[in-house]
Structure formats: structure tokens, C-alpha cells
Length: 344
Image 1 (cartoon, rainbow, N blue to C red):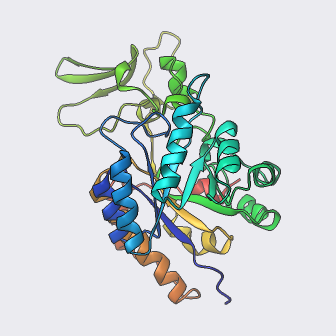
Image 2: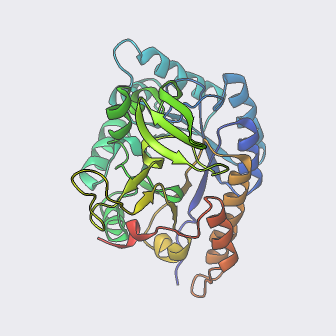
């Protein structure tokens, strides 16, 4: 079969050490953010100073890799200068592209740095060709990250309607929100995650031991009750436990027992990798700038091997079970979700 341009593997990095892991373990490009509220993963202890980014860009460029910088939150009145400075710093340091969502920041990049490639963040929630073509016409975007709620038929249709590069998430958390429309955290805390770069600010998280179990609350709302030694992730609403009321309705007095459902589940497109590549996407994105170096190293190595194996033998690509098991272990679950890309 005819092979088009090879898809680009875009890896996350929340630290300089993570950036080096990504570069050395299969990434074609690494996306990062400054240690400011201008990026949507503004967690404590993560992200880059200007000097760290400079070192990271030099490290990546010596090895023929690219660095993309995220400035993808939605600044409020009086906060635009911070975003503008992040754009200026990324450009002067030599980043290969800027990832943006807010219209004012997009306009600033287009007017002041017309040679700086713009990638439209998933937080812009561009789901159709008309929206994508608008951003291309007005701001000259080169690439767009599609929300994880889309399926392959829609991606194929988009591919036929736009020349903008299409990037999809290939592995990581399956968010229960439609990206760009994240209302659950702000509802519980009153602080916008799309504005200040955190799904749930640590200022609102409280841990209390009760009867040998750990209660996790967000602004007073109970998210989890954890047994001793139980592993759990950063406390956000989408990582809480819920009850499936459709399967087992809780009684009116709230004493009934439901089926607990813990989110998120890992998204993993490896089982449908050939279909995804043939749909016409240009880039596969691994989620997780807040995750460990081991996560970056493992996902990078496996996806690099899988992508290279497909292009070496596209008509006889074989998925290795060892790849799936290793990836599943990163989330402590054998379950994976691919349905968001294959079902209407």
C-alpha cells in the first residue's frame, strides 16, 4: 500500500529530566510549558523556567527533535501580559511551535511572530472543519489537537476537508469532559482550570483519616474514601469514584448500594493503530506532562516501536501483547478504552 508522511510522535515533559527521557526514548517532538499559569498543567513542582527551557531546546535540537511550548489557558482582564511574555520567551529561546487556545493570544502570535508555527490547543475544542478552517484563515494555524470525543469516521471526514495537521491523543487519561469545556472542577471550587491551569487547585484539597480510611475532599466535597495502602492519583473530580445509577439505582434515602466506577480509564489506541494512521492523522500525542519519567520512558519506547513496526510492514502489522500489558500496568488496570475513536 502507499505510505504517506510518517506520523509524528509527540511526548509530554513536565521537567527537564522528563524532556530528556522523551527525546531519548522515541519522541519526534516534546511539548512543555512554563512554570506559570499560562499553561493548562500548572501543577506545583512541574514545568520549566526560562533557563530550563533553553537547556531543553538545545538538548532536543542537537538530536534532531522539536520542542513545542504550551500557552493554552484563557487569561482574564489584566493577565494577558503573562501570556505575551511566555510567547516571546518561547520564540526567543527557539521553540519549534507554540500551542495556543485563547483568541487574543492567537492574534498576538500572528501579528508579532508570523513565522512562529501555531498549534491550536485541544482546549480550543475545535471539533469540526468550519472551526478549524476559521482558525487557519484568521491565525494561520498549522496543527490542531482534536478532542477525545471524536471517532475515526469524523477524523477521516475532517482529513478530507482541511489541510491543517490533525493531532489526536494516543495514550493517557480518558477525560470525562469534552476538552475545552471543563466545568466540573470550577463547579466544585469556583476557580477555572482553563484560566489558571489546574484541574483542581491543591489549595482546595483536604485529606482526613477516618476509621483507618483516608477521606479525600475537594472544597468540602467528598471525592474518594481510600483503604490503607491503596494507590490513588492527583485528587480531581474526574479521578473520583462515582455510582452507576443506571445499573443499580440508589434508593431515595441514599442507603442503596451502587456499582462504583473509578475514572479515568487509560486511553490506548495501539489496538487500532493501523486504522488511526490510515485515517490521515499527522500526529499522535501522549498525555501526561504531570507524570513521571518512567511513564514518559515507557510510553515513548512502546509507541516508537509500534509506529516504526507499522511503517516497516503496513500490511502485516502485528500488535504485541507485551506492549499492551506494559502500558496497562502504568495505570494499574488491564482495562483500556478505544471506543471513543471507533464508535458513534
